[in-house]
Length: 286
Image (tube, rainbow, N blue to C red; front, side, top):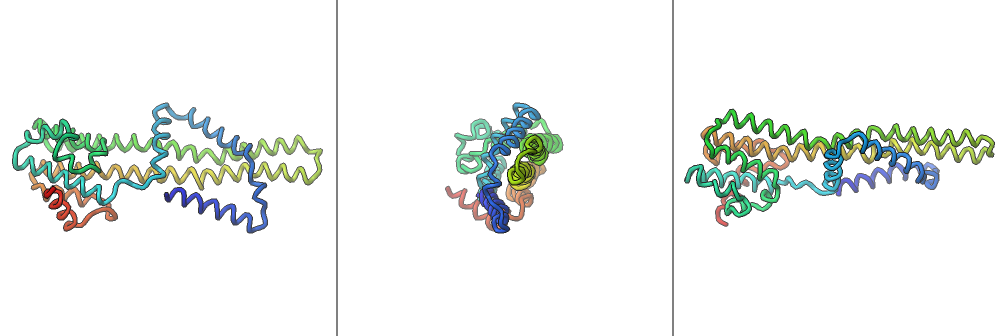
């Protein structure tokens, strides 16, 4: 939603300011310039990226027009789930959660938290490390190192779409110059035309530079920044799970382990201690 609002503001200010200054908006409508800039950028995008990177980028684009799913409610569900799992381990032993981690969709513990269960990446992360804890063959330091490596891999993989779009945005001004140069070449070969017609041709050529810069910094570049922010948000879920499970491995009670995880969250989504406690109590009563 904010992406569309931002685009509307960009267009209203740029084109509205041009019109208020006495410019003719029709002069800016140059579909052939857009074809040259957009087509060259798209071609360079496919040349410069692997099929996996292209697929990841195209898959990430629709998420830019949706709000963040990492809300306070989702974080509270995550921490309530971890509390329930760790409490069950503390009361009944590690082997008691074997069925839950093998089939989380059928687990009475996991099924109470649909927001978390819908995110298969975080569910896989939780169940994998609970499975390692059940095996009992790894200490906290080994598991922490493995978690760090997996989170780093997740971050690098998630950064690919942002990097691809950022590079695409960086190239758009250059493609705008290419379109402008093509327009200048066309103008020079038409030097015998009347001055009024030559002026129109020069104006069309300059629109290429304008469009390349506008598309780069007003439309494409901000998308790369937004993807980076969304990636940081998704990584915070993994960090919360990591801190909570490690605290449990180091002997802390479930309530304290979850408090460790709560402290990792950004202040804008972090629930208070009382809010989390109330949420856990309500989840218990279900």
